[in-house]
Image: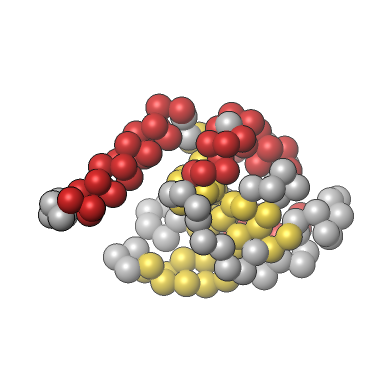
Length: 141
């Protein structure tokens, strides 16, 4: 069992980059992670167009803050999000491996994993959006 102080909950975190999905775990619930983290408090919030969410942010020992959130739409999965800037600085594969190791995720439970190509596509989309905002071009809906 991990030490109680291994996982530091972060109640407010503003991404320095984009909040990107990193991993999706096969049918799971936030409750599945709580035995590893007895001091963690599950938070509830509402996102426009997506409805109610529940999950939490934690800072891993490698310094990355990740958000574990239940998918509010469709079947129950846990999606792990991270801030693209530190993920890019540390390297995507290194960051994902740190998440898997620290959260003791069984690789068989990983349904989907972010790729370098996916990260580049997200980054390019963000740059296009930012450029259109700066030039005054309407952003397609």
